[in-house]
Image: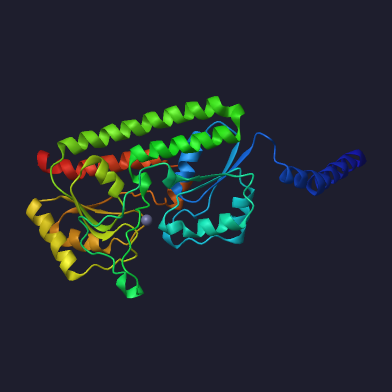
Length: 324
Ligand SMILES: [Zn+2]
């Protein structure tokens, strides 16, 4: 028994010493093959996760699952994580103006920085098909044309972003180049399949997509040519539509016999509900992939999973009248 207690005592001493000495050393000098990635938003997080599959990587998404990325502000811990990262991936639009300031103020010599908006051809923010335009005159400034930041909504763009992210991984850890390349090829295959699916649907489409919400899908609709009408622009924080907008959407639904009204994920569905109640059309989600709920995050839903669901929901909206 005494021996047993001695063994326990020695083991606990080893435990304490490990905590005191070994762990801090490990923290200061992470093992060579481990890559620390910090990503701002879900599409960056998820694409980095796919590219680094089967490798030793630590991937941290800065925005909390379920939160609105447009209101995100980095905490001191987030800034330290960006500084300590091997790869930092951000989108680089209007919602992430804080990034430039942070990376100009911290030492990023050991960090590969990827701005996703550098990977694709940018488009100015959408006004077509939007019923309520944002009023910026109140701020005393002329309305400026800004680049639309929702580049990831087009799977073609997502492929280009994945290529940039894969290159960053290869540069950061050349030993794993073959794995990153294999993961890129697999992801590209899946995204191309989605792209084909959306093109196929666009060729067969009948009707107009009715979005009783914001509309951050300019890159998407430009790629495939779907007809749509939406209440608000992409990053608008408006949630109340005017009576005129509700009436216009309602008229369209009835005239065109649309069977589906879309709202975005993690959003106020009041307008969609009002329209559903008055027209009998049903609500479906058109996921913009700004962020995912905590439940979906924990379940490991990916960009491809969510886009596949979008394809099915859009298909339901555009095919209903053919079958009815
Ligand atoms: Zn947005």
